[in-house]
Image (cartoon, rainbow, N blue to C red):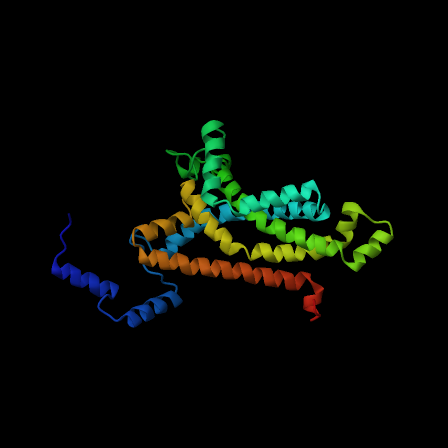
Length: 283
C-alpha cells in the first residue's frame, strides 16, 4: 500500500485545485476547456485531447459503417413496408422492427459473438486487430474482420427507427392527391414511387437518421464493451470505473459536440436539398 506524506497531499491538492471553492474549480476548468486544454487523463497518463483523438478514430470508423448500413437497409425496408401496407410483408417488417427496438444492444452483440465467432469461427471475438502483431503488419482485411461484428450490432440497432419512420412517410405520400393523379395516368409500382415519392420520403429519412447520432454514440459504448473494441465508448466506461474525471468530462463534452454537429448537418442538408425551405415556403 502506497503511503502519501502530508507534503505530497498538499501538493496534489494545490495541483488539482481541491482547496478552492466548487465555483472556482468549475471556472478554472471552463477557462482551460475554452482554450482547448481538457487536462490530463489519470488513467492513461496522457492529455485528454490526445486520448480522445486516438480513440475517436476507431469509434468513428465503427459508427460510420454502421450508420451508412443501417440507413440504407432501414430506408429500403421502410419503402417496402409502406408500399405493401397491410400485407404479410408489412406485418413481418413491423414485427421485426418492434423486436429490434425492444432488444438491448449488448444482447445482440453477445448473440452475434456466439453464432459467428464461437460456433462458426468466421470472425475474431474482439479487439480491433490481431493480438501480437505490430500495427504496420496489420492488413486492411485484418481490421475489417474485427470491425464487422460490432458494426453489424450497431447497424441492427439503428434499422428499426428509420424503417418505421420511412414506412409512415411512404404511406402518407401514397395517399396524397398527386399520387392518385399519377396512378390515373397509368403509373404504378416502384416506377411511381421513384418518380413521385422518393424525394418526399428521402429528405425526412435523412433528417431523422442524422438526428440519431446521439443514439448511435450511446450504442457504440455498449458494442465496444461487448467486443472489447478500443474506441471512445470503452474509454468513457474505463474513465467512469476508475474515477478519471478529466477524461470523463472531456468525452462527455466531445460527445455533446458530436451530436450537435450531427443535428446541424441534418438541418443544413435539408435546407440545401428541399427548395421549399430555401424559398421560405410553408411545408
